[in-house]
Length: 143
Length: 143
DNA sequence: TAATTATGCTTTTAAATAACAAGCATATTG
DNA sequence: CAATATGCTTGTTATTTAAAAGCATAATTA
Image 1 (spheres, rainbow over the protein chains, first blue to last red):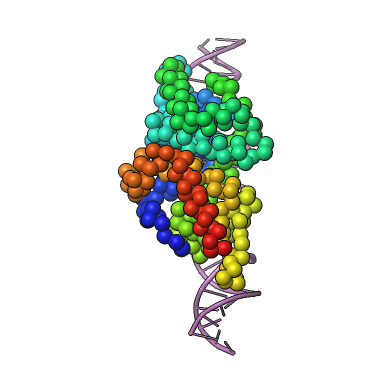
Image 2 (tube, rainbow over the protein chains, first blue to last red; image 1 turned 90 degrees about the vertical axis):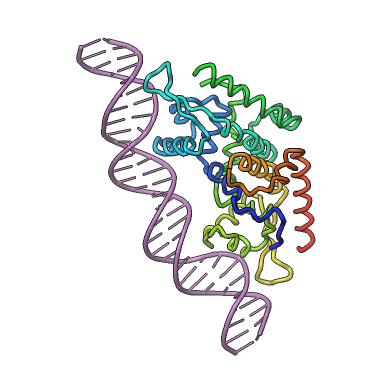
């Protein structure tokens, strides 16, 4: 086992990231928040993945506990809550976009719009920042 | 639920990526392959995460089935096998690096070397390509 | 205002998965 | 030729996940 100098990571970043990324449902919830405008509990339920209510509830609680999302009462609807990404959550955008880029490259059935992939490859950071500020604006407007 | 034009993805890239990323053990195996020079079954077993042999065997088979890794007989040792990343597997490097970058930013206990994070942020693609070509060279040399 | 529906869960139970331990075939080493 | 290394497989038990149903509060409709 060859040793790289960068190998001796005990506060291992992949293990840290795996707490979020290493979970199917968390990834899909993040997708819905980032790219599908999901804000309410029902949005995740109706995203078409067939997530059970208990699974969704535990995942939302976990993401909240990790500081990835925040849960706010919906001012326009008493019993409802609005789920939004924190800065830490928005920070996951570049990684999500890389996953999308990879899938676009290797999945023959991909339905990533080619112009989206092109825009990403032309300037990754610019696209991430654009999406991020769009999301921040949207989160502010209807809060 | 606001609709983005980029939202209607049925060949969903996040779901596609989640087949690999959405699994804790796959992420750790990829880490070992990419950053710790792991090549043999025993390297993964001894990586310190306490993975069981049955879990490791199923994950290696899955990664192979997905075309992420290849399994070759070790020419220098009859019963042994060498596991290496395919081009598709190496393509996951940028996403892995983004996860590392995110963890470095948000994990107060991170042990990512600061100079590694700096180098990444200075030129993400350059670092990914450097690591990728280093890995390809290493995979060629002792095959 | 009373009944109905919406919302965001919790609880129960069944099924799937993971962890642990042991075993095992082939290969190499002493 | 006996002992050890290697890469698994096969049980068995424990844990996690998923599906289904239920439930309290809030809003809507009649």
